[in-house]
Length: 479
Image (cartoon, rainbow, N blue to C red; front, side, top):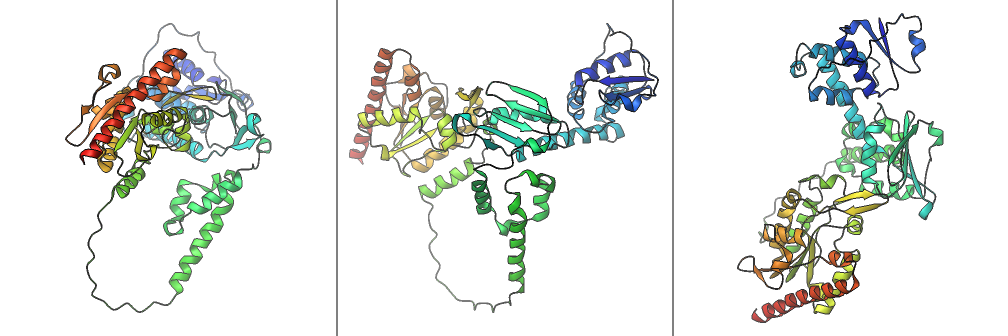
């Protein structure tokens, strides 16, 4: 009997090396016992056979099995190591084994991997950070009790999502920490070491109570999505039972109330159908865009940043994408680039109240660098995925002039890659009703290191906007 002791519960590399050696030595699955360091006493009376030295020869298995094994090994089932080795042993003789959906071993390992992924999703959804300290000394700490060994698997999501704040996620098995640069892990701790409340918790509870809709309450569905085992660690947990009970009481009262007499049918004059206004269309678009999943950028962004401005604006300014400030505020051009744009509009003689501003891409694309999220240029597939929102915005507003600021905006407005310098200084026909003007993005001006160049390029930018102002005056006079 071979007794293999792995370094820790998620030691995939150790399992893989041992499994390869055992398989090449011809050791059958039933002749192997697997355990993790610390559990050796369970097998103290078991005779063990030594492994051969690491083999020089090797064999290959499908990438599908490797991916499945890396996830399934995170399950808490103590038989997972043996099950994986049995599958590996069988795969050497049947390469299509994983495609047999009725095979008991395949069913079991697939269910394990699914349970791990489900637990990872629950960790993403139900971790609640609490603030420790204030201002620059603030740190955010959360407590979570995973069902499986998923902390290392789930931690990168929080590093991307909360890149600009230092945090720790404490669990009984393993603790994850983010310092703004890298993720680190320490041994698990008891719940007594986790904070119990913070100054923002009452605000969160009030918000939860406000959005709770008793008319749409489905208790079983809610408990399926948010199992009771997670309630004890959620700030809103104290409200769940009272809110459910209140909804039930309201329903019972409505049922107990005597039925009212039906109204007599009355003939009424048909009202003319109300036409949708631009405001209605834009609000509908805004609601639809909030749930956009057309490209992967929504996963890390805080929210969709939709356009803003008058509903029948004569001019539409299109930027490239939201920045850090815009992503947090949910509004376009509220950061440093927006401030420079406002100043340039004043100098060009354009009333900011007449301008509709939006972006070609509605979600913030960035790479984390410590506590800072650095802007990253959207790719062509991302621009194409977002272009229908721009087109529908433009159709609802009906501007006579669209100003594309930056290469990403120009590509969205004109439908193809468009060099800025070659196309500045003249109007481009979009259709019979509107023209386009191409210029730089205000953030380009902020990035220029040379002060003389910054002044010179800013004057060119204002000159482009003056051309836009002149066209608006001409269009208004013609109308």
